[in-house]
View (cartoon, helix red, strand yellow):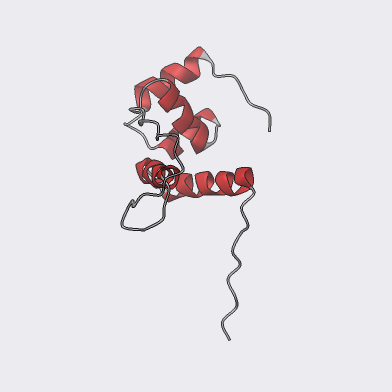
Length: 110
C-alpha cells in the first residue's frame, strides 16, 4: 500500500477532531490506518512527545518486570496511550513484521 500525502483538509479535520473522536473513527473518516492517525497527531504536536531513552543497553526494572529495556518500557507506554484495542493490535502486528519477530502459536489443548 503506497503512502498517501496528507491534504490540508485531512490535517484540519485531524486537528479539529483529535481527542473528541476516537482514533478509529478519525481513521475511518479519513480512510487511513489508526497508526497513521496516531503518527500524524504526534507529528503535529497533538500528542505530547515522549522523552527519548538514553542510548544505553543497560537493563532496568520497568513495570514491575525485571530485565526489560527502556525501549520495551516505552513500547508499553505507547500502547497504553492508544485509545482502543484494535489500534494496539495494529501496532503490535506492525512491530512483529518490522522486527521480524517469531509469532507464538498456541498449542491445541486436548
